[in-house]
Length: 73
Image (cartoon, rainbow, N blue to C red; front, side):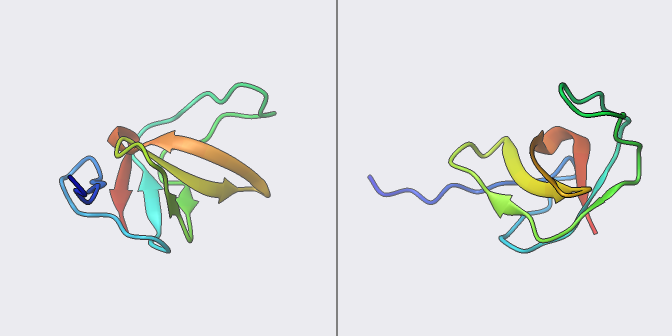
């Protein structure tokens, strides 16, 4: 059983390595000096083993963000 994991954004669009995404909601991040605002662009994302999460760099920090708060740019 070698099934490929498909990661989708909040609108159902398939996400791929290197895509850019926008936040659809203001998010509080633990250990981060300020909140991430709606519309913040996360470039060059990396997929994780969990289809409900992606990794991306925001203001120099690597964060893991739930895909339910993202939309593909």
